[in-house]
Amino acid sequence: MDPVSQPDHKLYEKILDIFLSLRDLRDQFQCYSANDIKKLIASKMKMKSLREPAALRELYMLETAIRNLRESMESARDAYQSAA
Image (cartoon, rainbow, N blue to C red; front, side, top):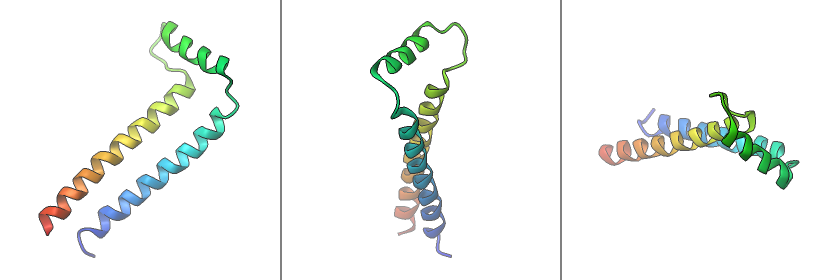
């Protein structure tokens, strides 16, 4: 297996996971009204504990997955360029 194939496969899996997360979050937030979103923001601003509301936790996890994908793509690009 050439060195580019393995990172490509991992990147594919990460992108697919992000697409699935986006689909799931879309389904979850689709029923949110403007007032629901305002309440979610207010709960974050007024919270006294370190525990995030569940909906925000899921958004943060998606944000982390996207950041990890971006970093992995940069690493794979660097490896590809150094191998060439």
